[in-house]
Amino acid sequence: MIEHVVRRGLEHAGSMNLLKRAAEDGPKVELPTWGAILLAVTFIGTGIFLTLVEYTLKDLIATLAMIETPSAAITVSTPDEPASKDEKEGLLETAPTITLVHQKPITSSIRATMRHLKSQAGRMARLRGFRIHALYAFAFSSVLNMLNAAVPMRFPLRMVIISALGGAVCAPIHAAWTNKVVSTPSATTFWQRIPSRSSWKVLALPAAVNAAMPYFALFVAHASACLLGLHKVKDVSGYTSTQWTFLILRVVAVIAISITCSLFLCLPAIVTLVRTEASILPEDQDTIVPFDRSFDGKVVPKILGGTGAIKFLDAWRSFNWEARRRLLKHYVKSFLVVFGMIFVVAHILAFELFVVMGPQLGKLLAEAKHQGYIS
View 1 (spheres, one colour):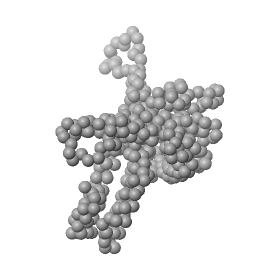
View 2 (cartoon, helix red, strand yellow; view 1 turned 180 degrees about the vertical axis):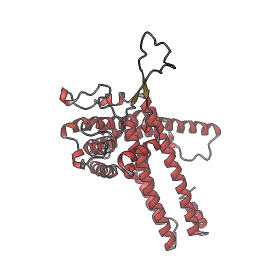
View 3 (cartoon, rainbow, N blue to C red; view 1 turned 135 degrees about the vertical axis):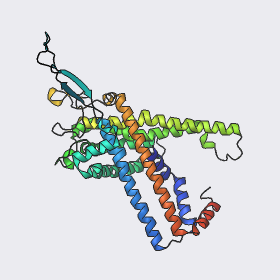
View 4 (cartoon, one colour; view 1 turned 120 degrees about the vertical axis):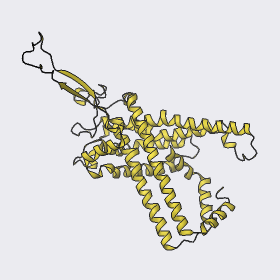
């Protein structure tokens, strides 16, 4: 949701004009060469680092959590031997005790998942599939730009339809990425991971829904804000306590609607897509975490006359509540980790900026405030 909000905000004409005006008419900054290099290296380096961390947490581990089926271990314990040979044996022999122990899911802990990935795929396992993921992002963005130029601006729900078409077109690449992420290391090439045309028919719908849901959720949030009159709010300096209360309640309502859309629209969409992609994983490829390929008997293999893939609605229904809670906890933990890193990086950049600019920083902030770029 945040990614799409930022993208749509930057695509807006008013936002682009504001950025252009700030770059041309804003306060001029003179930095020493060493200071500019220091800030650039820190900014680019931390940007790359945060991108890789976010990929590992938000994409890689989350995908494994979407397909993992917690396994159970069977333990067999023999009966206790008699204390002495003279002790009389019972009329009936005591049979061994069989106990079914449900093991803790691997993806319930970030550290446990990282240790498991390292043991299965080596030290660089945290970045496995990153190149395919970057290729998908580039392909999806390219298709989106082409469709954006072809579809009229006033078309209803324009971005929802465009993103759905783009997701359907790029579905094979996303499926190849999921195949790479969830399977154990093998000599399979990228082109061998691309699903067949018959499989694309299965993937097109969930891929389109997954690509369109963030934009649809953004549309719902924007529509709710307009219905509540937030688009008309400009000057709040003269608001009374009652007006402030109603304004805060309306803002909270829009935030609640946005969170609800993320939980009940965006999350089921990505889970459905990933589990559908995992269902068409070739039989000769093992998964890196325990995975029930039959989806509790809902998938009929091709050799038995079935499609070999999970149906659209069954992909989400087979993802039980325990797994949903585990995935939500992982997203919360990932958000806190990334937010904490961003907080630290922001303070490092602020400290470097203060060291490089010195007293000029205060003058720059005062001039920017005077010109209205900051409040």
